[in-house]
Image (cartoon, rainbow, N blue to C red; front, side):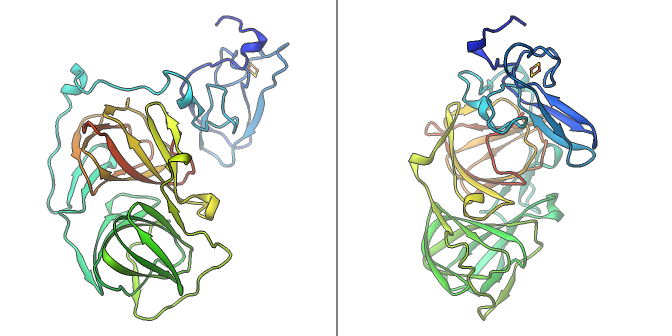
Length: 356
Ligand code: FES
């Protein structure tokens, strides 16, 4: 590696973070200057630069971390996704490459309403799934522990009349309204809802959907819950210490990630400190294969595309949900000329731009 001048420091050692499994009790010294030949760790090359390494100790045995290699993180030693903003760093892939042409389409399983891909990843079709009837609504279970999830569950609800009060006990609940309008009554607090907004429900609160036009709602419970419980009576009060519950799309709050962008919806800024919801746009393109340390549910709102894992692929379209276990190598391609709009829920994690 060539010596960088002081003005160029810290140097970019790599445009991807480094995945490490750590030992408890051991001290790790993360290279902050970018000059070490032993990335992501310090080898003493920082001497004379005025930059010091950052010491880190694992929180528990076997802790899995992504150490920043671009050295532009604001959360050192951890990656914060800053590498995606380096020109040319967000890599795309050619869907027609000889390697990709060998990856076959997987077939739809009507019994599970899914196309199964690698490592527990699947594409769920909400439009073809069998539904359970309940007061004012029907629903299907999209993601659950019995379908392979560890951290989160998700249900798709179609509501045409007032529902009972729906509860997921002590879970954090994150909703996305994909169609229709009406009101959500959270513990006696009425909140207007319409398509393309996110809603946050605190642990212990029950909520009722009151449609003015048919509501289509994706409901995530974190940690995972097997089934909702229903009650004709209001069973809880609104927790007024968390007053902000509805988050809307705002083009001024977009984060760029190469040619893609996303906006945070329900996240820790309004109290959801375990699950994070975002809305994103993917132009006609295919991301290079990558992984995340979090589990992800990706709802396709608009546009068509292809979900790729290492040995299989599946077409995706509006109202499909992609379930992605942690560390599953994958890439999502938008095939529509106008691209794809997606909503993601990640858990655990608060930053959808971290990938490796
Ligand atoms: S070599 Fe980079 S901080 Fe020590």
